[in-house]
Each structure stands twice: as structure tokens, then as C-alpha cells.
Image (cartoon, rainbow, N blue to C red; front, top):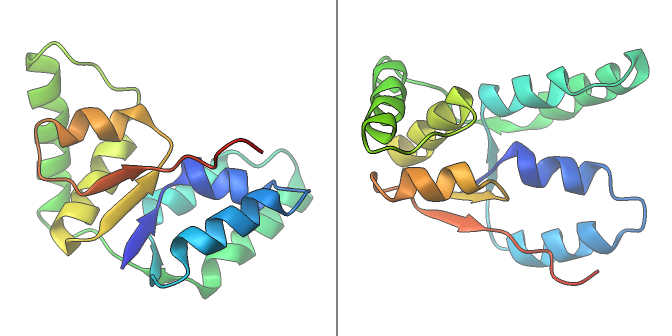
Length: 135
């Protein structure tokens, strides 16, 4: 099972050549791909117009979701706190929430966001920076 971060999903959704989609499909062929509500929020807040909003709003409806637990919120805040105390600043508290969901569910997080690599330095986050290669 694999959770695909917004940073990868956006590249796949915006691919007009089909090359990125092909690389993504080959990479995730044998995996069950899951979603989180935080990724849904990030996708929707990036909509440029009403048409794109509707398209992005319909897309996650057919996905399998990993939900936050009662512990996710506190643990996400703790990750942010621990990173900051270590002198590391990340750009998004939502990334802490996504990382917590992945840790709690023991799934791999596929991403293109250096914040997750920083989180993995202090937490047992199974993560992989997805390189689409030279396209």
C-alpha cells in the first residue's frame, strides 16, 4: 500500500504528454494507492478556476482513504515541534499530518517534497522521493 503525495499527484494530473503518467503507472503497478483528506485539501486549494475545482473535486471521490486518528493531530504537531527544536523548518504543517497518517498506517509515502525527507530524519516514515526521470 502506498500513499501518493500531492507533489506527485499534481504532476500526474497535469501531464499532457502521457510520459509522466506512464512512469507513474510503472512505478505503482503492483501497489494499492491510497489518499488522505489532507491531500484532497491541497489539490482543491490549488484549483485555478471553477472547471478545475469540479474536476479535482470529483477525482478523489473514487479513491480509498486513510483517515486521521485521534492521535494524528497531536503527533503531527509534535513532529513540527521536534523539527523546529532541531533547527529544521518545514513549509507545511499539512505535510506533518500526511506523514503521521503514513506512519500510523505503515505505508510508503511517495513524494517530491523535501519536507518528508526531513521528517524521516526524526520519525520512522517510510518514504521515497519519486524521480520521474529525464522526460
